[in-house]
Length: 395
Image (cartoon, rainbow, N blue to C red):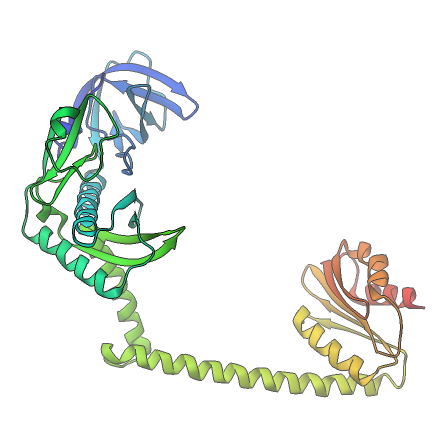
């Protein structure tokens, strides 16, 4: 069994050890050590990163009772000892987040009768699933305030190994899932929990906790939060966003939401007006196209870089103006062709059949109603050539 130094001293980030095994499995090359400070993935907490003799440790997993350190290269088979260096920032971060989770779960359980059902320590934020269907703003404010009060009071965080029978003497947060010796993480009067993760010596080292919001997760709630240095990082990111906004909107911070809301409303009004004007322009364009056709029963136009949505809108207006005509609209793009094939209400023909005969020319796809079909494909032929081939099918 590997001696787990992270249980003896979670602040230890540098160590020396003898190698027990150098091997490889489906995850890649790995080494097993006589003792290690690297924490393996488990209990919702990710593994530690760092180096062993300069080899990057890219994963740490406990497999069949042994702690495997997966490296980005294969160590020489005759290597007998290693010097390990942990990513200290990552270790401290995980200690802050995991301890913060214990405090948060304790408050929700003890004060609001909402137990935690799962925990995930992510790269940027942490989440817990809470056994409730919703959380009010007032409840969240109360819970967050109580969590930070416990952090600031700097309660000691203790860890003890004991038998499962001895552990029953404590007010455990949930029943133990293992038999034999267990490790309890204890925040006196706050939390008593079986846990194999790394934790700081006191709650004050968590620094602070901030709830970021919650979402529905099946019949439960998933609460997202950050603690410690992650909170400072989040604050810095949001402060930078606010600073950038001030350059664009020179208003006091407490007026910025109202100002942005007004800008959004004004932008929507402008968009609505632009849409109305574009529709009017399409109507004028459609009438001009019909007039220029001089009664031709097949109206054909090829455009450059016009969207399929514009072709559809233009096509609908044209067939209203020319109920006895066929319509072929094609838009040439850099590497594709898009088209609309239609006819007026006085004609009885399924344009889907026409499209099926011509779409192979551009390896295209499309479909629609019998009188109005749209589609597109690769620009394998000129737009005018494609339109002429469609016209041939009509005749």
